[in-house]
Length: 210
Image 1: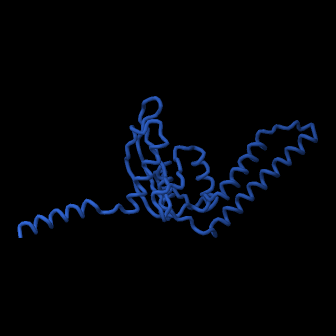
Image 2: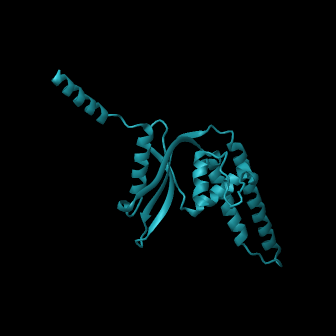
Image 3: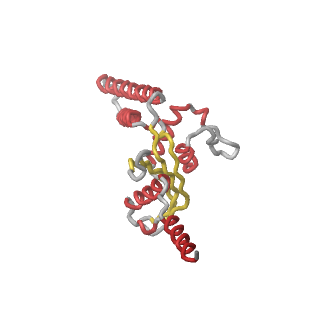
């Protein structure tokens, strides 16, 4: 009887120690390693908060919309940078053509944003991480990232969004407002946006930038 009890204790310990990791644990661990691999000083990496959910990547961040948005930005910059000689009909015509091109690119982007709501949802594991890390000057900075892992294979990283990237934040603000309308981005009396009704992905970004 004594040996049987010892056997049960050993078997329980071995079984407990061999519990397989959940998909969420795998997604989180893989995401952390992915971020560290892209850091100059990975030893300084420290997780402040981490959460993983299966969620939809907003349709207005699809490749098609982003490509159209980039083309609009290029056209907008080209038109804004061109200062014509208003006494020259050739220069004035070029300015008008650039303005027409800018408007056309903007309307195309708007059209893609409207159509994006009909796309098949891109549902993946999204890991939202807030962390501390040292910069090149030895100072400590808090950073935010969203890492995307395949829903069917959570140890396979599809990409990431760096919330410290000003360009990404500018795109997110412009495209999300165009997609939902300004009225969805209501602020409370303290000047913070009410994130009720936004997705897990969107809430993390909005909370990080305000």
